[in-house]
Picture (cartoon, rainbow, N blue to C red):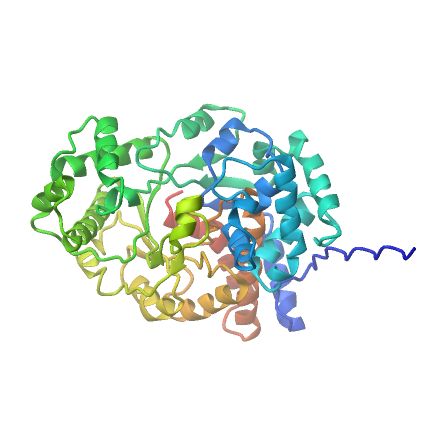
Length: 473
């Protein structure tokens, strides 16, 4: 009988993602060494606060690595794997189903070559769970068993990993009607050392034409104790819920719509009442949402919540998948969008307001150099959001630095945003960003554009200074 082939090793080279040129790489090593152990500040993400509040063991490898990670599930789906087989949109897989979902990932490991998902998954497996063999059809069961064994240990519960990862601040994403009980429990627990902050995310309350909008408005009024039967009541209820979030530690409000129009609507009261009655035209519902986004900027000037915008996404692009598995299941697709003119009404009113921090993200790389960097290079309120969601990949991050720095420098950028639901990928994502920034700064040093002490100061500032200042942490 022929001997079984030896599984390929899972190799993590110490110089991964650092420049290939020896002289530049040597500088990058020193810069990365200076920041690699600094605490993680994560001002925008999607980990559920209840994960840390309850501190229950993660159920299985698929629930940890596969089901919540859109980058993983969408590429497997593109190769013909049904999303249901990966646990997407379900309340959980059986043990057999979880093992099968894990096998589907390992059997198709080659699909992730050259992707950041491959980089993050390898980091998680090797550095968190001590896996030493490369995922494949032949190693799937052994890796599954090893990770499952680790997950049964107290050292692999969410809070223990939070501390091990060196996370200092973790922001979640929350509906205005959330009671924030998990956040309150964590803040009151003296045994939990860390900050888990809610983020005010009112998108579904502003999308006036969306199904369920009137129900959301009703619920908003019930929780705030303010009658939302009028436009002024709707605005006051939003202000009340923002105050609730600030009382629970929130520092930012997050907004994502297909565009960032911010034109004022003189007859907002009439249109709002028409929307409640179901008689508003499609154009009116869009106009009301744009007007309310302008109002959100005004509220940020009043209450100090950082305003982040990430437009240009066609949500739930595939109707059958939405019907079968629900929203946020990996089929949101970028679309073209403009910022300069649509944001002008907002910036003319509030662009120089001392309390407004407006962080602009994009899924269109051309916006970095054409619109966002020039805006951040003039308006004191505007910051360039880091590459995220489809752009949080090595080459895209390198292009981002080249596109933005010459116009806006480093100080007008946000610091890294991991934007993830996959809890164990957080340190891998931040380390990737630190390595890439170390490489970019090292090139500036070896080209004699910066001295190394300036590069070191900048590297530290990008990890700790920028997110603290920009997101008011």
